Image (cartoon, rainbow, N blue to C red):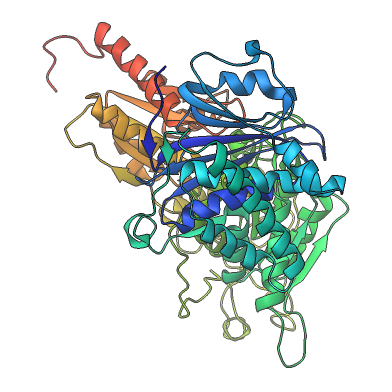
Length: 617
């Protein structure tokens, strides 16, 4: 039987039970490899209940720096009898199955094309620990110790991580180091040389460099602090809750006056999503930079308030960490399926600005940028993250912190300007960009006041149901939306190495898998010009990109090709030119999936040409 052999390039997956304490041990494993200078990309796949259901933790090791899911498992650490069959089925031929052999397993439980490595983990822990909880928790550390021997991990790096985690808690530190050594001792005596997958330390500057390791929810929270957010109102919902929790942590560190102890921020856990968005709108109307964090079901509840913010033109930032839907859906699985519901949230003719971060670095950047855009455009801004980015730690470029940065508050009329006789029409377009001037409450004792309402009005905020006044407002809002196309983060173009009439559009968390897929496709002589979308509305460059190609693949993680629908709707392109590549089972898209889907489509095109023979290019 062949044996998979790989150095610094493999995928290992841990199959555990939720609530068993395995997540911290598996994360420790991933971080130890990263400390050796080898890039890793871990993903925690967990159930939406509290305890008892299956959970998985997948770690991709890639010296080349590929951070997307590859597809396929080279080694399975099978610790959950409930999912044994499906876990074993995932292993690549010639791969490895590591399991707890304390109880005998029938021969039929194993695959003949997989190398089996048994270790009596339960028996080892029962022999050394009497407390049932310790037996459970330390079993995870014992298998990390064994894997460190099998794969060549530096045990000193793991012990340093223990030291950081249990600083000042020497008893916990000593017991974890002991459990680690139990696993190492057994593997060295009984299992050495049984695995062909190896980790070899690299020069830290070679593949990791100055990159940091952080999750997207923490990153966007820090970006919101940096961008000047002073008010947060939220209601807990997976997978966005840690955005508000991280914001509170960072505010406690950076937004408390050292002399007086006064908090320069306000955080409210509201009674529901409707109340949270209402609070944020009130804060935005009063001039505070405010945000809420939620997921798809929360956005559904917020839509009437979102429509009010759009029509009353109130700055607000909404962080949507997308998950599987519809309805309650899959709270702990990832998708990109809220595009349409957010882009056109509320009733009537409504369009909203969406930002699509690709990683934690852009979560940080877009979090800060969203607050500027909300003020500049006087409208709701959505940061469209998702569970894959938000709740998984990812290597990314370090955050850029410019001490000279100034907040862009947009068109805010001052008391001096009002006193000087400036004409103030709250909903009046004075320079053709669709954006009116606003005042903040209390700016002037008797000038600049207006009544904000969700019903129609004229350019001076006076109630009106006259058709011309309504037309003026909604057409001006459309002008403002067109202005936004030049202000939002622009697309990133990656031309192919050779001229091609094929293109691909992608966005958000599909980015790392797409990057690898482009390399794989090029190796098969399939060249694609690639454009990563970073925002909606779409800048003119997106329409130009589509027009320059005979066919453009649109890669997204939802069932209904929502991004493709938006492109057709907004740019009025021929739908036949846009070929959907759709992945929506709740797991992050893989490079293998993208490569396979595009390869099949390109081969089909070769049978059925896109243009008639002899047509001029």
